[in-house]
Length: 110
Image 1: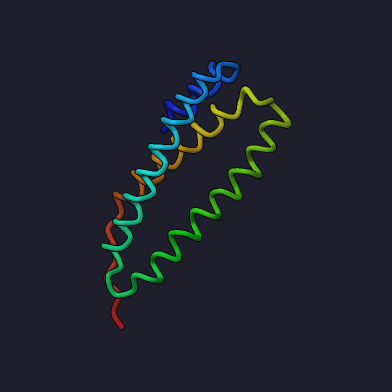
Image 2: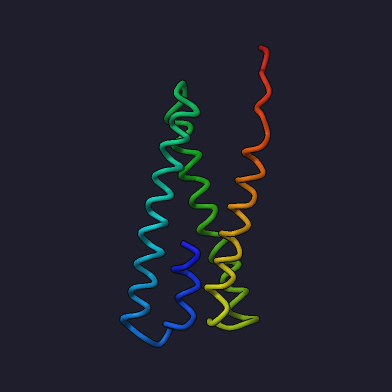
């Protein structure tokens, strides 16, 4: 996914290169969304509809924030910085996910 977004910058004026970069990004984005959805369903088998709605809401929040931050990047740096900014957010999310995986869940007593 990061490679697809970084490849946008040098291929911005090449229709074939741009299509390839967007294809790489789109395929990996779709695959990762499905993986996260399956993991969420396994984590909350007692409330799959609620878990699915949270997953979709999170995706929509990401789309909205990405549009807002992407617009700011375009205004301040230009279109050439958009792929790098998006790749930086992906890298930050990977690091956050790795950090969160080190925490052990606490048991809840009702």
